Amino acid sequence: MIRMIAMGLWVCLVALGALVFSLRVNAVDPNTSEKSAPVAVEIGSNNTEVMSVPILVDGDVQGYIIAQFAYVVDKTAEKEISIPVGVLINDTIFQYFWGSYSDVRAIEKVKFEMIKERIIDDVNKRFSKAVLKDLLVKQFNYLSVDQIRGMKNKR
Image: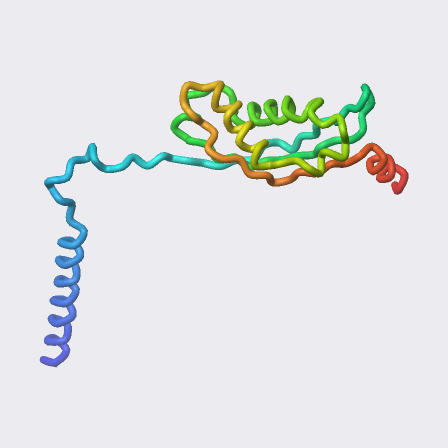
């Protein structure tokens, strides 16, 4: 019986010692000010709507770019704006691709890194603070008119 009580006291003392040790190790230094602590930027991610951009050559539709992107935004800056960032991204993408690829074969040579930087810059120019932090390609396909007609005929 005495052994059980002694063992219980021993466990309590070890637990108390561990608690005191952890409090001392994680204690805040009173000499450091809160101003010197780095401010964490709250970020969030979301997806754009799936969009299709027609590719025109001499006034005729030659195909469509089907695209969807994921984007990372600064949540604090996003709260200050009234327009959803996804809408602005879609608008910028549409403007970039509309009429940019009159040679349909050039679609295969799209440089995503260059496009990504340009879209991020164009969207952030519309605001006083940078809202859009990163843009990731989730889906990017080119469907020619012949492929679309072929899909219709298979049904």
